[in-house]
Image (cartoon, rainbow, N blue to C red; front, top):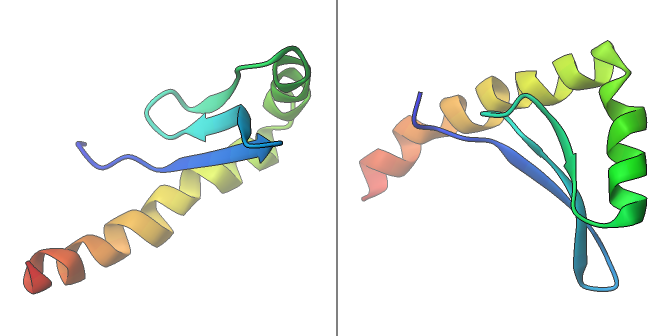
Length: 69
């Protein structure tokens, strides 16, 4: 539960939007990012794909990271 997957998008060194696995949707931080997040949030397959990345990337590698530490 304490492991979080974040997929951030940047334009000109400014974060425009991000997917946060704890929130479960895209969040926009600029005017363009808010519009894009609204479009992406309407696509359930994209949300499911991003949410699945938490399990595929984070949970798969957490055991490896703890062994090294």
